[in-house]
Image (cartoon, rainbow, N blue to C red; front, side, top):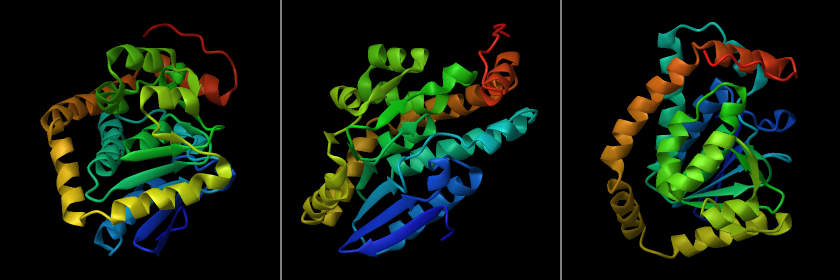
Length: 259
């Protein structure tokens, strides 16, 4: 396993740690690949529960700045491929056959919010911040919207996706995106305790229950994600997307044209 994702196994639990603390565990395509490989290894392991957390002060601060720069000037086909990669990760976490627990130790922004809320259980420290901030820099939160609308309903999803505002763990808890708000010093002990509660149950029953729950919207998700990948790729060819990226990198207010 590469250093961007650390994997440890003990007491029937695999702990996966996003390991770019100096970059607030921001997403790169290397990290996405490493996380997918880590999930494959965790599925094959004897462990029954997966805990996903971040190294340092953040859980995952969204897309890495260098990766963000690399999005400019890509062809539509390349954008489709990139979008599909993120979609596969979200779906992999959401459909993972073993129970998953996100232990959100700090900021989980944009793709970081997506990763945290795809897990079966999401525990967060009070200081954690969440946000679907894509519209603030010319993106569209297309892929995550398919899951979010199912999780919180249309009205709350419109608020979070259209404003792009940040919100704290307490608000995320009210929406059901976070199961429990836990003091920092208790976060990992509580995650492990929850894991042991799950381990005490029949593994085959737990897996069957997960499959059943996911089957209720599986066909709908397939269609929505396919459309979302196209929408996500298409927005990256717009003038507003380019302006959003450049203004973010240049730390200035964007000048939108609506094109």
